[in-house]
Length: 467
Image 1 (spheres, rainbow, N blue to C red):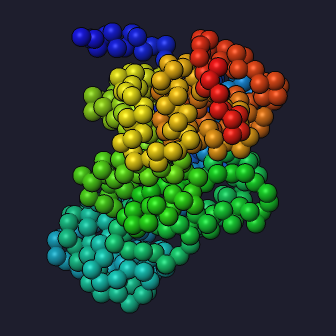
Image 2: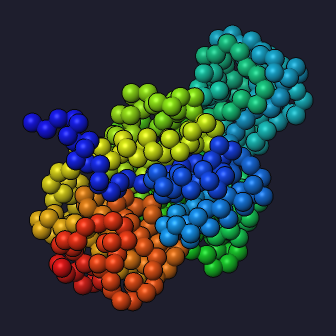
Image 3: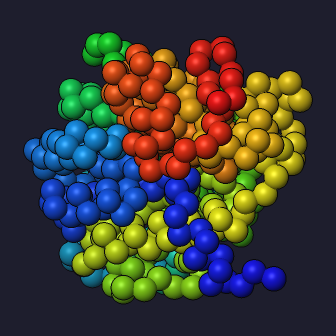
């Protein structure tokens, strides 16, 4: 019987198939730190536009692009829009905590006058207009629960269900309410106008409720020029779960934003929701990112909690495309160690999870005649060291990735943007090299990513061969 140490040792030379999306902030924005994070396994750099100025983000864009070119390693950049992040207004005494009593009335209105223990401003008029009797308002990550008892459109009266104090600028969630407004706030529009000039690979859209939200963002981008930016829908509202298939159809990728999602839906349902999202994205050849608190204890520690180790490993066992860090790489003293820790966990879990890929595909109810499934089965049955794809637009590489082979998918590209965007798909190792693409240099491609020579399945347009 193989022991744990043997599993770890035998798997150490494997390529990490699960991608790592790392958020970039004060702790990680220097070029030296970014270089080390790339070396340890960062594939996608997330720039969070909830924080920092355009000038600060611009420096990150430049540093990442320069490092990607210098290291000859495609690194994707994902700009993450803040979205309609809701917060209440200020109170009469700044930072004072005002008492709440279960059963008391508390009013939310559009009056900018500082609040007190009976009322406070809710600055978003669209939210006030959308709230209806019976809806819940959850503040401070769900620690405070208010139930709407009366609504006039300009103000709502609520009953305190849970919570004993309230203070300035608490964020709130409205899980029962479909907000009658577009997904792009005025801030998002200003940010997006700046972002598209930097030509990122992905834009992540926050608080998506319906497929039309993704269409709205695409139309905004298209109205400013001809861009190839792909859109990632962040799933953090229950309304999005009701039309997830339709959202996945129009988006280019999905992020399971488990933080807000676990406030807006019963938190014990989040693992099952995550598994279902992975199934949907695999069927539709769309990448999926698992986000929020994966190694959050490492903000203050050099070691992860044991439950966090299992959480990261579970993402690999479920064969998600990417895991993601947040404050672990923006605020901690050791962002490089965080990425290295995540890489080690993912590699060990991937090695342990190696199974019959044909069986895995069958369990996902994929069509029997699906060509990409045939490619993966061919690679498995012939014990291939890799699948090599000559990429034109990326569709073939994404389809093969969705079948989750356990060998690298080497994607030889003649377009740098396509190479960057393929980084998000599980197991895809893009190479941007027009000369290698034109010469169909398979051996050079294998050597480039450090794969030993051996049998490979080659996909070139509609032609599939074993070499």
